[in-house]
Image (cartoon, rainbow, N blue to C red; front, side, top):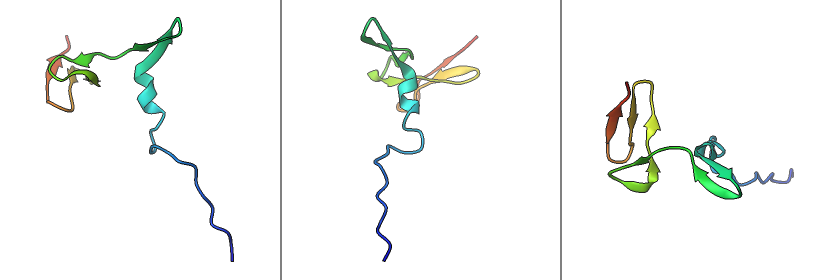
Length: 64
């Protein structure tokens, strides 16, 4: 019988995409995206073509 292949643990298909909103500066963590003013730190605003929006509370800002 063929031995079962164990796949490495993954956080999903876009596991590395979550780190695109973070960077480092002088060895410290820097957040590149803007936080939602209603939800507070930890919830980023999604950037769309004509607006920024929060997926948690629905807050939206129109871009000019």
